[in-house]
Length: 341
Image (cartoon, rainbow, N blue to C red; front, side):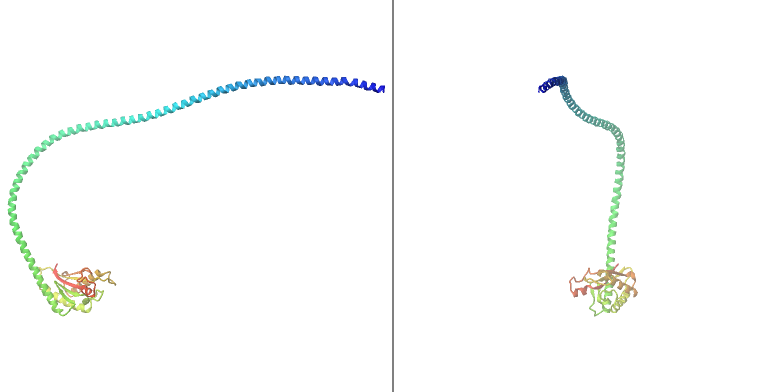
């Protein structure tokens, strides 16, 4: 036991110095580390302090630059405003310059026109002066001509007096010739009327008793049905017989009428107002065709063609304007008239 206690005591005595050494080493290490930390903290503090100073310095410089920039912007804005004002003034000056140049050009034109006008007036004055001299010479010449004209007028008045005397004699002769001509014409008309009466008298004798053939005034009237079928220009046998008698009477009368009477037998065709159908376009064409057919028949019987005239009147000269069958019958007709050409 004593040995055991001695071993435990010796063991404790041996352990403690080592423990102390370990603690001393840890303490020294801790102190060293703390010293290093403090040194590092010192250096970090120094570095941080320097950075703060530099940062503050940079901040101050940045503020100064900002102020300078604001100042420059203000100056730039002022310069821009001044430039705009100068440009506006320059534009106004340019406009005014153009206006003044225009006025100068106008005034220059006016001056040129005035100079031209003055030059023209000077030329006109020279011309007027020359014309004045010419006018005076012309006036003198006209006075001479006027004197000559007065002499001629006096001679003409004398000749006119003689001519008026002759004219009165001529008018007397003309009036006498006119009276004799009228008398001769009236005599011829009376002669033709006498021959017409004789001609119609013969026709009346030849066609006596026919109600469809009449003398109306100075015309011999055939109803159309006597000569032509309805709507046709081809003569029927009854019409041919009647016209044959007409041709015979006309040939006998031709030998009796003096040659100086220029007579013709006018053949007029008439229709009623009702429209027709067939080969003719209308009543006018039908009336003309019937008048021509009568003329051609008389020519075939020996009546000279230059003594015959054919005319068509259609429905436009009715004897009776009524719209009745009796009126239609009257209006469809062939009229013969012995007249002067």
